Length: 162
Ligand code: ZN
Image (cartoon, rainbow, N blue to C red):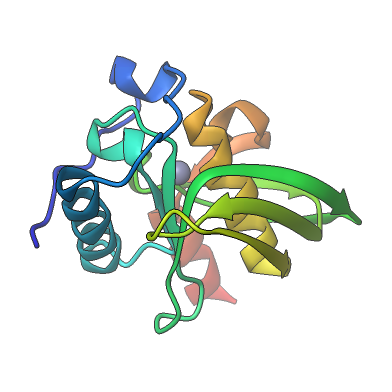
């Protein structure tokens, strides 16, 4: 297991479409382990393979800090409702912005054993699923931000003043 370098906005790998995973290999298993380590090390709630420079359709998500999901070839099949809130991305360090997402998402994917499963999420989990799946198609949340992209530091100062 190892921490991989997180690619940042401006890196062309983040704008490319990732390829479907057709079979599990030792290399891909190691990638998934490293993605989990890298996500936890960076205190993120999700990470997509392109963020560590690998154009494979793999995302890891953990919104609770103890219950990681590995989604291979994820496909969102149902959404409903709406939530508007702050979002951030490990590839856009120090920034945050307001994005509207569905409040409920159902996704079908393969797990780390290449077995199909279905995952339903609401609120933060739904937001994370949408955000990470977009990475696989070369999109960043900054394209969807309503208003200005803000500096996290400024936001924290603002909260201190309240
Ligand atoms: Zn992201």
